[in-house]
Structures are given as C-alpha cells and as structure tokens.
Length: 145
Image (cartoon, rainbow, N blue to C red; front, side, top):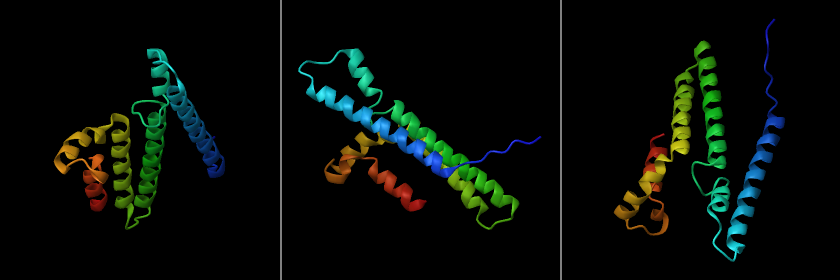
C-alpha cells in the first residue's frame, strides 16, 4: 500500500498568510507596548517582545523565515531531481538553485550577512543606501546569480 501526499497550494498559502499575519501583529503590539511604556520594561518583558520582533534575529519570525527558505530549497531539489530523470537541459540549474536556497536559509538562521554591515559601512562611508553595508556584497551576489 503506497501513501501519497497531496499538496493543496491554496490551503497552504492561507496557513502561511495567517501565520505571517499573526507574527506581524504580535511584533507591532510588542513594539507599541515598549514605545508606550512609561518605565523601562523588565528583562523578561523585553526578551518576550524581542522573541517576536520582525527586526530582530534568532527569534520566532526568523525561524519561520528560515523554514520557508528551506522548504523552497527542498522543492527546488525535488524539481532538479525530476528534471534529471527526464534528461532536461536545465536540471542542474534547478539543483544549483536548491543549493543556493540552502545557503540563503543558513544565512537567515546564522545572520551571516549581519556581520558585513559594520565593515562595509565603514568602508563606504555609511550614508544612504550604504548604511546597510551588506547591500554591496548582496548586490554582487545577485548580479552573479
């Protein structure tokens, strides 16, 4: 007896949209709470807010984002595998995309691009678009890909 998996894209998209919406609402409420507070929040409160802050790293939203990128990598790998079995000319392109998405997921999880901000900001003067120093190596990466 074989088991089959049926992926219902509409249902999946709704779930992902709901999860994303909930994370956004929690982040906004947390930020509003901190901004409206008359006193310095306790460490526990600040930590709880940080765990859902969309502008922070190594927390719930970044874990969710990492999972989405890994899911995309898995789908790209499956497509690459199917294309290989069909002797498709672009099979390796799909496989390469899968590998690139694994790298993007690692970057999201480990905050690798964040380590580039300060050195490139200092190198480029840190004004305008160069305030976020990772933009330069990121643009080079995008141009290569």
